[in-house]
Image (cartoon, rainbow, N blue to C red):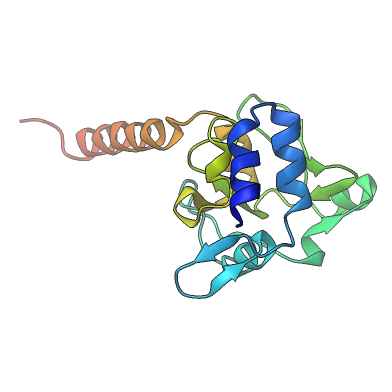
Length: 164
């Protein structure tokens, strides 16, 4: 990324402006991948196809067959699911609907808070759309998720191995 773009990003803090830049730059090679050089967000996302989401452990999807511009088709393909709040949900960006496990690039440090890190390789991680929606702007999501996992593990151990 050139210096002019980096300076511009460091001055923007409105989420609609940040999202506009992110969306416009999806196909531009702004991510400096240590192994592959400069790549686009789409190329980076494609490299994660078939990997497990680090939070739910389910295999992530990518490609044309996992998105559609038809709500009816999205429902017919099983893209609809019940979210953690108990609401029926279909992931949508603009006029396109996505599979719940469609791969997204999550910004570890929120891009609205640190726009200059928006395209930094070290600030991006693969995450399924469902988990990314749940995370939202919560920068403590990973810590909370780990704590929930450890609590569940402790409960399971205590259930399996009753104290003497």
